Length: 161
Image (cartoon, rainbow, N blue to C red; front, side):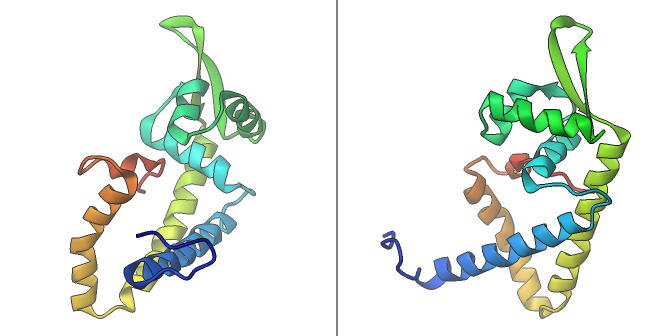
């Protein structure tokens, strides 16, 4: 049963709330390692393009749960930064596709590498049996969090390096 606003969550939920706070901090610090300033919203778009390849602005907006007008403004900033391109689709000249530039791809790799290094440091501080239990439980948690079928949770807009 969900608690009322302002009440502290109980048990496992309280632990997950604390874990989410810590993981947001890890994500934020990884963005700070980027060679250029990048926001979380910008990074999510870049990471999704890195994972799935070129797509339309509407497709990117759908994947990220954003309004098309919001995505247009975000993409304007990504193009100006030199991280993505807008190109006419050769198979359908009415469609504009967004794609990563080499600079954008390097930025995604740089941020995710920094994030992975910090997460590995955290995991290394765990006792081996606890780390093994976590490794067995994480896939189920990730599927539940994404609301997707097993094996598809990586569609959250993030890519491995």
